[in-house]
Length: 169
Image (tube, rainbow, N blue to C red; front, top):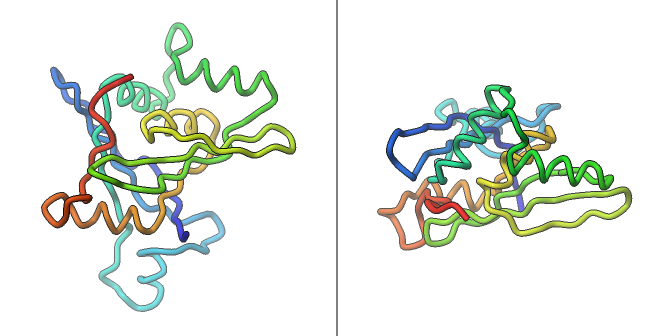
């Protein structure tokens, strides 16, 4: 169950389209110890570069992520801000988001929350979990098998692909 720290690398907003694009890139964890391409480069593979993956997300999620990355505030709390504030007022916090699988072009994630002594995970679309991690300053992790599957691309297998979801709930 090896995993690597990831960061939002790029968000692409396209006019007049529902599908938007979010790119996550492999990031070296603070302290320098990690796995993946960075370790391969340290081992002498000069061609190794940080990995990235792209997912298709809905317009509302993409706009929210872009707004949070820019550090701008909406005039009224948006859905992710409301959820974050409710969690905070109840004494909880977002601990992390882990993107754990990619099946049939859809990414799957677990959002780990904690309140005092309890830690629990909930199933989460990455496009919903990422805004919450940005608000909380929490890390995003991607499992090694997801990096590998995303790198294969859709033409190399029935389960490969780079789409999260195109619809908004």
